[in-house]
Length: 283
Image 1 (cartoon, rainbow, N blue to C red):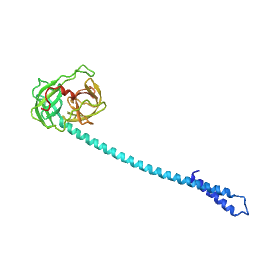
Image 2: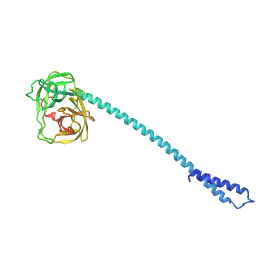
Image 3: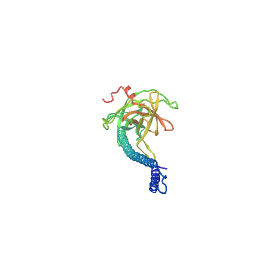
Image 4: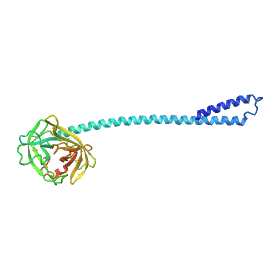
């Protein structure tokens, strides 16, 4: 029985007692003065307790309403953060696309791989993309295709990943006609932390179209392999030399050196390797 029912029952009992006490000639011993006082005190105590319960209930409702408002605000800002992150990723993707170039050689109009535009006059790629023996090396970004010269190659270590093929070295290309200015966009970073999320940009064959176009994806740093950066994520064919940016620092951390045969990951050469190149990058 709840408090209100108890109060109503006691009030009924007290009412009956008062009615009976008025007819003393019929039942003078029905309710004594002490019993009436006890019932009145119990009703008073229950009413006070009921007021306290109602006050606690009101406070609990107010607290629930406050928590619901805080939860709604948290969900709102979470959604806003998601939008901001999406917008930030889009801006990073556009910036990275501006710094990514296709690299090829000879009369073949299709690129052999990708590279990173370090300055308007210099690009870096992997040495397997172009060789010193190649004639008419070129770089292209969008419709702009210009001749380039292989000026330096840095021999690196040669670890393997499940096969005997050595990893390539880094090659520096001098662009014949300066391309888009990279100042204010390009920042190089040291080795990223384990678990870092990277944004990759490359020019690859767009399936079903017969053309080459920009292709981006997210990678996760899974560890290291010697001096190389091990990554997990979808790496399509033709992404060799493509740059990867740490989305937290907004800085370039490496170039794709090799992919697994199942295209689920691979290795990046860290851009700290550029320190071994003798050519002054920003000359």
